[in-house]
Image (cartoon, rainbow over all chains, first blue to last red; front, side, top):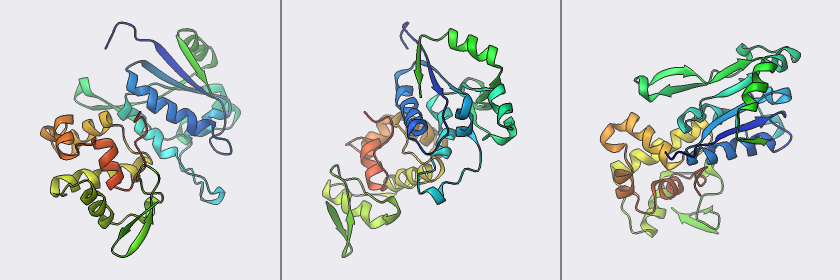
Length: 136
Length: 110
C-alpha cells in the first residue's frame, strides 16, 4: 500500500433491474477494488432495493446479479452503507436485505457484517469525508 | 467462432471464451487445453471445478487476487499463491482457467 490511499465512495440510488446502472456500479466496484483504495458503497433512495434478498429475475429475462454482492467481502469491500430513512420510506427493514458478511483476516477470519444501516445525517457526514464519489 | 468437442460444436467469443456457460461439458476444457499444449491433471481440475462453484454461488469469475485467497482457504495454504496457480495455468490462472471452466473473463481482469 502506498501513502496516497484515497477514499472512494460508490453511490447507488436506483432500483437494481430495468436499467444497467446497478450492475455497472457493482462491476466498477469490483474492478476498482484491485487498486487498494479505501472503498465504501452507499445505497439510498431506490438503491436500497439492490440489496433485497431472494431476488428472482427469471420473468424479466435479465441476469440476477444479486448473489454477486456476497462476493464484495472477498474483494475487501466491507463497508456498505444503507440509509435508514430510505428503508423506512419503502416499508423495508434490514431483515429484508441480504445478510452480507466479510471475513477479517486479522481476527482469524471472524465473520463481520458488511451492511451498516445509518441515518440520513450520518450518511451525509460519511459522504463528506470522501475524496472521490461515483454516482450511479 | 466455435470449437468442436466430441462431434458437437460450441460457440465461443473472439477471445475463445464459451458464449453460453450452461453449454459447458468437461470435454470443452480438454479440447481448449490441448490447443494450448497443456495436459490437465487433478490439480488443474481442482481449480476449474473451484471456479465453476464460485461462479454458481456469486455469478462472477473471481479476480486472480480473490481466487488466490479463496483457493488457499479451500484447497490448502500451499496452493493459495500465484506461483502455484501460474505454474498450472501459465497464461494466467484467471483468464486461462476461467476459459477452460466455461466462465466469462474475470471481472476486474484488466
